[in-house]
Length: 497
Image 1 (spheres, rainbow, N blue to C red):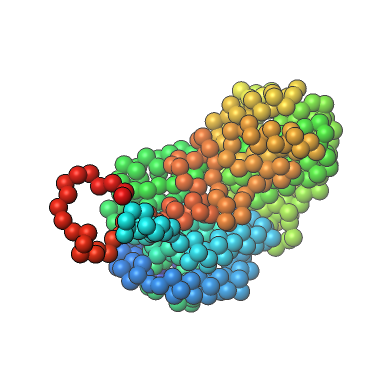
Image 2: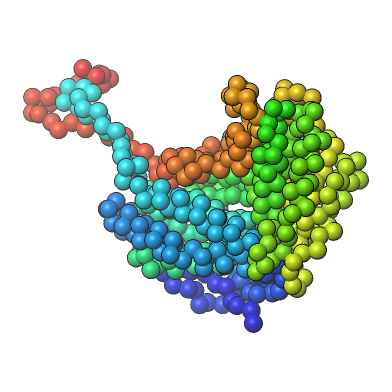
């Protein structure tokens, strides 16, 4: 029997009828497991109205009271993270260990937000002029919108909403229609934690719901993570409607391997970063840039490790699960065909995989190409699947130039035992997040996540202090408590005496 997946508005599940809905599948089996209601104008307006009403009291709630709710939410999340991970596995397909890791990384932002009283401290300057003090404060925006991707249905929203709520905002979130249930589970945890009704709302839907959020006059900001074309659309549409927007786009992440690198460590890293979560990560390594003469030996070690990867469903202790939909699986497979046609050497073909699974899931095994060149589509485009490409270069400078020329600039890594080369790389590479012998350089929550170039639209990254600044507005107050002797008329321009 399929379940009905609905909205969560003003502290309760929304019981209205939906004109349109979408199918939710278990990617591991291909089974239809749910029907998700799609929000129309009435549902979006109801969610925004509830959030706007809740903002009046939540924004005035003391920092101490807000943090009490966050701490309770953090404890409930920790107690229930295995159940949340199971929901992710059932609708996204990633194996349980990967799903649990996603929840854990999201929880780090919750813990960061628990320190919001310290993070919201302003500055104070006494006596900037005779009898005059100046100080700054930060205040919440109001109703904020979050539009979430399918690949991290729990973690990516948690990059945003803990900080938004901690700083006094109220939230309307639209999860991906492909795996929508995780945010309903999280909404229930917020309810148990004592978050007032209307502070956290979930609307399900497709582009209709997105456009309604982008144009709604009472939504003050939009946070988005997804593909670059959609990120650009979100940014342009949201800003055209006067909203503050952070839109994180796609990626093509390179790993530069120097001849002095530890090749066993490098091969492990390339396989883990290339094929974890079936490559459906914006921080996945999809290109290994091998500085000769290491390519042949590195490929040998990578293929040895690929042969040990177990592809299958989450019930069978597999290493790698399915892709999110059959259409996406077929799209990734078409990239493999295009790579072959363009002349790249197909070392390992994931289309031949025999998964350890029942049913008709959307599987594609780990795939490795050698002799990839920058003119090929498998190099130029974000594949978002388990496809790893080897590009051979003759020098560090050639590798650096290759990375810097790519239109994406999300994440990159260098593998080397040369500290000087690593420092040179971090200074010269035009990418937002850099790993030194670390393949997936996702920063901790107290730093900020985001790339450069076509990997980010807007100038604000996720979480960390940039996240705090995004969800608040600054005020600077100049104050004087008058002494009667300071009165009188003076039409001259005020100066600091």
